[in-house]
Length: 220
View 1 (cartoon, one colour):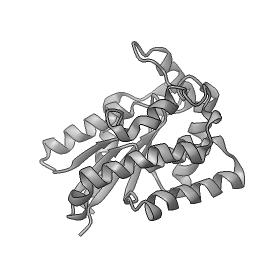
View 2 (cartoon, one colour):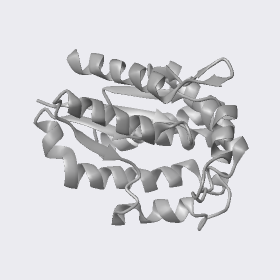
View 3 (cartoon, rainbow, N blue to C red):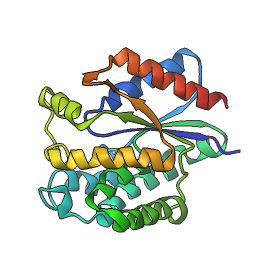
């Protein structure tokens, strides 16, 4: 009996890492067993090309690398993770929580394309990872909906973190948000709104909504 794979997605500086940690802590407090994944796995050999790409080795702008090419870097890391880390646990009915997944390729790489080209890429990417590579498709995706202006404000106040080629390009981040919002509608991702009007909701407010949504999914 296969388990459940639940994915948390959000554009850069959406507070995803913080919310993912809070989600994990909440499940542990309720004695819910799960396996935690965070992608990309920067400390692993399988992420070597990801690190080169994000550090600008292949070009200083995201569009310098084809979405198809860049997608394979991230897909290989997920494949390696599945085969060596969580396949058995998942296939025996375990709950998997993932901070980013194939859906991140959908957000960041599809943003390099428009219209029919974008849809063709999405069809290719999901087929490549879920059918050809054989990694599981998510049972649910939760999208932290943080508009670009709020992201820009948060990035400007980050301390001590070097920005990668995605984070340095505000027009690209704007396109990523537009793409992510459209994908949430297209694929039925659960949208967790991070703002009310022009005001960013509190971390507690966002996490309470996310945790409630995840617990509902788990109970089904």
